[in-house]
Structure formats: C-alpha cells, structure tokens
Image (cartoon, rainbow, N blue to C red):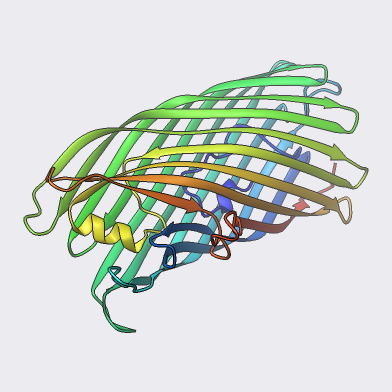
Length: 388
C-alpha cells in the first residue's frame, strides 16, 4: 500500500507505479485508519522556539483486482492489475512563538482537510512485460486564525493555505526469473497558496521527470530500490502590504526521492522495512507555516524553501484467515529545511531560517534530534469471492 496517501507531507514522493508488499490475487477491498504529523521548528533564540505542525487523521478505502505474473518470473509485481484508493482526513493546524525580549508573540490555530486519491492500471504484454499507468492527487486546505502580539484569544488576521501535488506516470516493467525492472515518465503538478490580510503568495508548476524501480526476490526474501525526480519552473505571484503591487516571477523547483527496502515472508506474515531520502525545492511555504514566516511574508519577503528529509518505514501484514489480512505501517521522518527570505524591495538583508523537520516534542539543545514526524497506518484487506 505505501504510506504516501495517508502522510501529512503533501510534496513527498508517492508510490505511484511501484509496490511494497505483493497485493492479493483476485478481487479485494481494503480499509485503513491513519494518524500523521508534519512539524516544523525554528529556534528564534536560545530560549524561544517557533514551532508549527499540521495533524491529519485519515480514513482510507480501496478496491482492486490483480492477476499474478507466471510462476518464477518477476519479484512480486502482478502482471495485470487495477486499483483505486481514496483517503480523506480532517486536520488541525497549530503554531506558537512565545514572547521574549525583542521577540514578538505569534500564535495561530486552524482546521482543514486532506483529500487524496490514487489509481493504478497495469496491463500484461506477454509473459514478461507490463505497461503501467498511475495517477495520484494529494491536497491540503486549511484556514487559520492568527494572533500577532495580542493577549490570549485575540485575533489579528486570518490565513488561507493550500498545498497540492498531482502525479501522473506511464511506465514499462520487464521481468526475469526472480528479478524485475521498471522505468517510466513522470509528470507532476505542484501548487502552493498562502494568503493573509497583508500578503498573498500563489505558485504553480508543471514538472517533468522520471521514475524507476528494480526488485529482486529469492525464496522468502525481497529487496527493492526505487527513485524518482521531477523538476521545472514555478509561475509565482506575490503581493503584500501596503501597496499590494504584483510581483510575478518564474522560479525553479524540484521534487525527488530515493528509497531502499528489504522484506521477508513467512507462511502468514509479510514484513517490509525501508529507508528513503526525500528532497523538495519549492518557492513557497504552505504547510505548517511558522509565525516568523508569517511576519516576514506580511512584510514583503519572498520565500525559497529547500527540504531534506530521511524516512524510515516498517510494514507488517498478517493473514487472519485466507480471506482477511490485517496490516500495520509505521513511518518516522527527520530532516532539515533551509528557508531563504529575500526582501522584495531590495532594502533589507536576506534572512536564512534553519528549520528543523521533526515532531513537536523534544528537539531542545540537550536533545537536538527530537521526536520524529510520525505516520501510523492500521487496516485490513478482504478477498471478494473465493480467496486465491
């Protein structure tokens, strides 16, 4: 299944054309529940932290059918398959920067929603080849109430934020005994929107790139390596107080991930563990916006964000009966983000924020790693008709 459809990270890479655990042969349905968090932290001073997070709670449903490859060929990917999944979630946004000497208090709270969809079609071309077509859309929209320098429960302005990634891929997979390789073309649409009473940022791009996967299987063992990258230019529109003059630019951006995994299968239990490096370069910030960034955007600064994050994931699937299997996925993420703020008027010096990408707990000077960004998925799949 993968965790991308139920992750709080909209711009992280998706599974798309590949698989982790081999899907059930025949017609089946699946349901799942997920809790996830994306958190950003900036150490304003030695004693003051600016932290922000967004937390969705997903309900996922899916339906699909697969036909396995001939015995001995490939490494678990079906020869033919179709599958659709939907994952919806309410979300909660929260940000706090406490007041200190020369540091103004900024807080915000809000609610939003994730609306995620994925679809896959795989068609056999003879015994050894398959053509693959897949699409995925992940979107988050939220409205926050912001308090700048006020007492508790005061309201300074409202913020609307939107983050969206749409992926479409077409690829070809070839199978050898115990091994398979796939390569494809990937098209992505990335978009970010961030608007308050004093600033407006909107960026969108159509990015092109590639995706590739190799898988090896021997007896009960499976190993995989997967990578993808898209890049291009974003059309960026910005405005800010007091004049709200249009600032239109074309700025580069890219999204990429590289992943390694290994799995083992017992008669009733399958396990897969993996590690991934994810890199995102975007000319906007539209998830878990910091109070420091809010003040900068309202003051006419333009953002450029470069995120580097490592994800560690484990998935287990257990067959209760031939028709019912339960699964469990746990993913942790740690990373860093460099946000470069450039004054649109060209007067004030450029500012660089070293933002930590990790959970909302820990991360003090005595605990620099802090807690991870977690994604937890629990669910089950059910055979429809006689299980294969």
